[in-house]
Image (tube, rainbow, N blue to C red; front, side, top):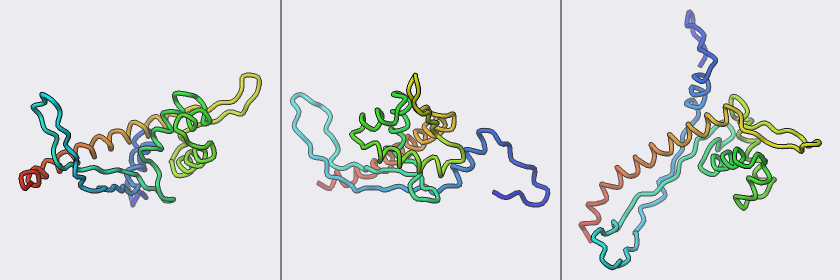
Amino acid sequence: MVPQGNDPPAPRAAGLFVRQIAALFFRYSLLYITDVKTHKVTKSKTKEPAYRCRGRIWIDGREGTFLGYGRIVLLERIREYGSITKAARSMDMSYRHAWELMDSMNRQAPEPFIETATGGKKGGGTRLTAAGERAITLFWKFYADFQDFLERKGNILTLLNKCK
């Protein structure tokens, strides 16, 4: 957002980060309405619905995907293990792919999400920055809102369930 005329400059704290993320494009995919196979469960009084909504959500930046479910899990694993190598291994992902994802996020973010230290006596490592922590929190809020949306819209499918 470019200040116009006498507009006061925007604060440079966390609010700037949220405004910059909000300026990105949001993309979601309602994958499909799936026919959920119901299995007879002995002595179960609740029956699974015949249909449900499923979907995925991504936050797009100027280079394409900026944040998504897998990228956020990668950030969380880096926080947990302190290493891109260990985080990638825990996700059955190559180091190169993990590094490319992190590099893409860091290039598109207003502030880097991770900081790396090269080896030495204590060895290297990777740590999440405050911006990385905020990105995780922000994404999980969007994800929860999207899941709520799917659940609300999925309730409409009860009409289809009655048609069976």
